[in-house]
Image 1 (spheres, one colour):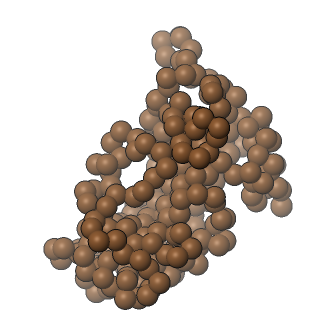
Image 2 (cartoon, rainbow, N blue to C red; image 1 turned 90 degrees about the vertical axis):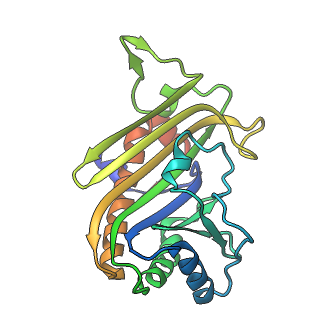
Length: 248
C-alpha cells in the first residue's frame, strides 16, 4: 500500500450501500435478545421497534451463508434518521443502509448504543467486534479487473468477470478480513438497471474485554482503520481515482 493511499480521508463518491459495526458478547442469561431490545428502546425513546423479530432489510440479495452468520432471529430497532440497531442473543450491531455518512458522524451513535448495552450486568464480557462495509459498483457488465487490484485465476485459467462469486478470508495480526465478491448482482435504485458488482468486506477482531466502553472503542477504531486499509488495497487505481479521493 502506498503512502498516498494512506492519506485518503474520504471519497467524493463512495460506493458504500450498507454498513454495520457489531459487538458480540458472552452471557448465561436466556432470551437476552428481548431484554436488550427492551432496554435499548427505553434508553433511546426515538427508536422505532417493529412488531416482530426480523433480519436486516438489505437493498440487495443476502449472500449465501449470511443468514447463518446472523445467528438466527433478530430484532431491528430503527432511529428516525435511518440508522438501525440489530439485536440478537449474543450480538448487537449498529448500521445504516443507503448513502454513507462518514465514520465521524456514525461513531458517536455507535458508542452511545454500545455503552447502553455494556451497562447491563447480564453481559459477562465482550468477545468480538467487527466492522463491515458493502460496496456496489454499477455496470452491465462490470469487469472485475477494472475494479479490483489483481486478477482472478484458477488452474491457470482466468475467471470470467460475469457469473463470479468469490468468498475468502485473510488474517493480518489480530484481524480477520472476510471478502465477498458477487458479479453481477441486482441492487434496487443504485443504477439504471440495478446491476453491478458487490464487494463486501467484513473485518473481525476477537477480544476479551470487560464492560468498559472506552476499551471497546479503542478496538473498534482499530478494526475500522484496518477495514479502510483493506478496502483501498483491494481497489484498482482506476476505480479509486474514479471515486474522487480527497487526501489529507
